[in-house]
Image (cartoon, rainbow, N blue to C red; front, side):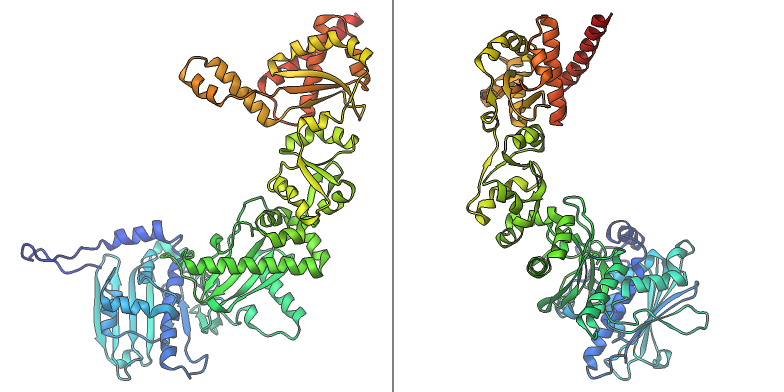
Length: 615
């Protein structure tokens, strides 16, 4: 607010900063509050705090003795409460001072644990929609207290004057706004009613709305929160909570978990999403503090792995941030987050123990979330690991079923590696699990903790090739010339070529190559290209013996048997390149530019050879 001019103060005297209220309001609108609509929340919040203080003066008064009344007719917005009210001294302290830091203010702040507001700037949010704020109040602390009027304007000026008690016969406060012409979308009667419902539907004090048409006042919060009501049966309670969650979030919950943390006065529900969500995507939660809506996107309420639920809660002891649109990160919030995580674990445990159908539907939709939890939670691991689905050489199945037929379980380090070996490993009777998905490899390695009779090992090329049968000596000697030409043609890819027999016979070739091996070969190539330079020294220090890729040709395949008999050198090289390209495509890994070029070239060369032969 505008303060007295201090230009006449003598040199060296203390001076007070002048406050540019318009600049401050611009700061609030662009950097503190997400939308001008918060003005009504701030007014409701001030009214609720005033009612809380009034209740402290009259603890035996009926529950509906004090309330809040809203009025909006398009020309004004008015919020009236039966709260504790303000004295003239209070008006000067709380309405006419910005950023006050006196000892008295600090003592007041220490006593505000029962109030929603903590920062004393809420009333300024009204300047987001109005150029003038009129406050008429009368204190309930003194029976014969006069009324006091405060009128603040957008230019930073204000007036305060005392009025006779008859100006406001009952204690409480009325705040009246005259909206600006450009803020009609936030101050029209229907919008004010909608905002009141949005922010105040769970408030514990009665709130009514009057649209100025002369009709009956409408209750903004006619019923208490659904978890605060009584129901005839547990089933009816469960259905009511699910219906409330569906109304709030727009989906039918797979199940509803009731939340109750008496230590912090927290109650609410967690709605289990019926469908999977992208990994790591965190939904915001709807958080009320003492009944007032704080945030619809409070991601910090639950740990990251709990992205399979959305919560609606009302809490007493959580602290809002300065904007009162999110939660302040402190020890209390951390403890609440841990306690709510325990409630979710308990729900999973109950489903596993008593409702396998619900557990199955839950895991089908949210197995990734459970896997992320099982990695760090031994109890969930023991309980659910056998139930979790994995991609294996026996198809998509649980580890429990897979371990019944495979006492030795091999796990790949990448999806690409699994794609390369799945068909051949399955035909060879090997039990391989795709460990390339998030958490899967780590979890499979923990299977022996649940089933000690099962052993788990990483799959490496040597393990696979050991299960491929060698060809007889005569066949190998007959193919020597072809294999030499093939190795020469594929030398650019650091690829060796071998001849084996394996099932299925329909697979002409298997390309055994890991991502790590390719990276190491690339690094070695860079070191060679940078030989003698600074980068050459750095890359040379990192260089290891680069493992080579292996193209294993299947002697059982008719195409391979025909290829190894080719005597024309160029055609033999082309056929080897084509077999390499086909095996690379089957691995489903991203192709390097040189491999794409090789596939196109070998196809065209084979087509040209076939056309020449037919002509």
